[in-house]
Image 1: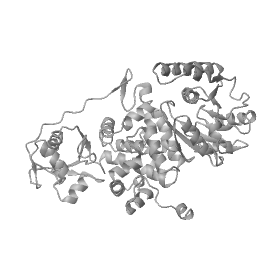
Image 2: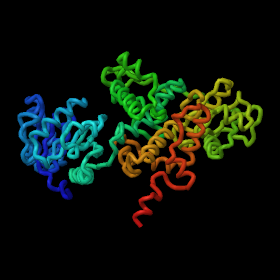
Image 3: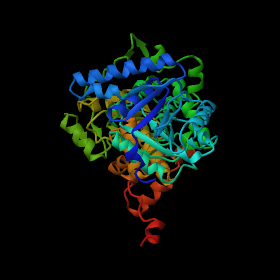
Image 4: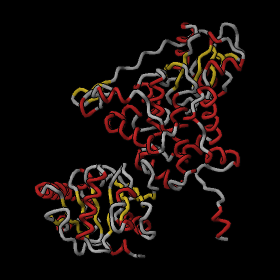
Length: 506
């Protein structure tokens, strides 16, 4: 049905909670007449008043013209299944329960014209399973908006297994006409954004389970080295661990226990203990009057008088510029700093034939121009370790001191983010451009994960993953075939390369 998107002039939004109100505001502002429905009639009046107030505020700030016209497009209806003649699209935003949604669409099928399209705003349920109860499942697809809808420009368009073939393309055009950015995602567990987001959270929890660093240290590294707006534990506290735990478990089980998505044992007891995060004042952080409580970072030791040796020329220059005495050989009294890529300090020092009691590891990710991370292994002389810390701090950059692990923390987080995106691309759950767009807009990352992998270097990401796999034996770190193939061919992670379709279409 080519051109359907341009003919959508009247929609019905069912469910007038936060998500429903946001969808109503977006559509009405875009010029669409919006019917509001809820099982509680009083909720409809409250929603119309709320949206009208938001429209007035935007007009007062000069961000919206003709607020009265927008408010005039808001129409209350008596019930979700009220007669729907003239309604082109129904979007449900009711509670996340399969049977509730199925029952709702079943009742709508009895009152809506045959040409009315149905959309579910589900974030975790299968679109195909929701549609399975319909006599005509082809008329339903997923339109997953993100909260707050007017500000979060991303919308996941998710066709079910039996959705009409013409409908996803028209839905993409409709979302664009409303001023938002659509991406097309397969009806797989977590769709696109929630699936991609597991890369950061599952690895951060694994790092915490290994007792390598405290949550605040991991978050500082994630913000300052990787450039994330929020660290993974800040994000878990913001979302609420009760919610995040359920998503972690759901996506992992949805992919039949794929090790790369394996949740941590840490979350279940924390949920049982009520450590949800901001919503109740205690999570990975404590909160007082809604403000996160974080201890100050420890003060670094002074710049050492002992000489420092490192084989990394970039680090040597940074230390020399800070007035640290850098030598060209690993003298017996020198502090030894080894750069780490996908390996532990112990492994790197052993491979280089260095005395372990004088070696500390340093993460080169970030080019020594931001926060520095120093790894401490069990055999390090404490005095040497403090001197190494002081040498790094002399550069003027903050230094996070962590326990030595199979790879530096920032590298593990980034490799997991990129590898998860590569699996999504390799399984054709979404295109590479849509993956990067969805993650950038939906998760607020500084860039899309595939473009990020290209920036760092696919070969570097692969080296980190192979090092983690060799050190831990854990299949969670197995590299995606999408990644290994593109590194072997010298192709960017953001390109599909040649496909059978290219041969068939020529």
